[in-house]
Image (cartoon, rainbow, N blue to C red; front, side, top):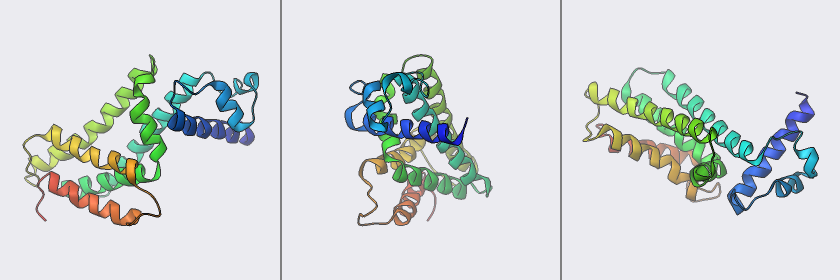
Length: 194
């Protein structure tokens, strides 16, 4: 792929993301996407197979980025509390920076068709299981005290996803302040000593 083709593909993906977030997947047409990037119908299909493939690519790329950030976050320590805190911080930071991806990923899961739906759900399950494993490791090490590992991992994941709905760069708190505060909240959720 040439650099120009890669740039055009990224423009198409970004336009689709914005349109899916603003108008919804069902209401967005390939013509809308083409118009947003100045590409006419037949030429658009040189870059994209279908609107469904675009949606799946957005969601799968989002999950790949989240899993990569998670892996980097937990690599540096064996301490369960440090690992969970860093994973939560990476999770919250991603959602603060990628609000449209989070919004589309949560709202449009219903719009995915097979085999994309299965692939995206498997990726999401893998990501959730990574957090569940961190919580379980902390419980087994005697560092966390939770009634349900599964519910605690869901609550921790909800922290980041909620940030995507309200965070703004020009808001009352900086991204770093929110990331730090949410790390503290996660530690409280799992009953880690202060």
